[in-house]
Length: 87
Image (cartoon, rainbow, N blue to C red; front, side, top):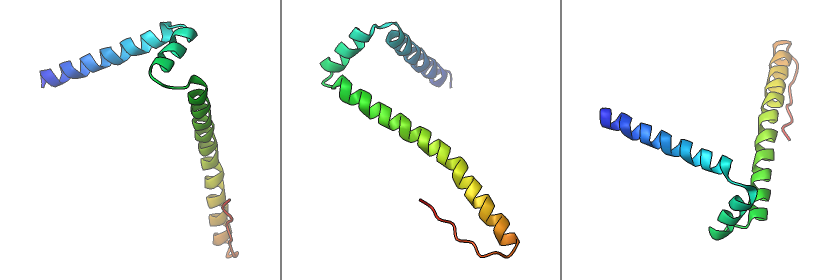
């Protein structure tokens, strides 16, 4: 059991060191590392931006979906016909 904990501590230390390395690196160093790895920095930036925007959109959509479901439930309690339109 102590070996497992030691491995977990080693992994945590490695992750911490990698994070610090990225935080301390200049923009130019990061761009150069990406290029050396065969990654187009502009394309990667666009991909990450699109992913983040989709995540924000999805998160915001959850509240709207919950509101629609709650509204439909309230209407059903009053015996109204319900037709929920999901975009």
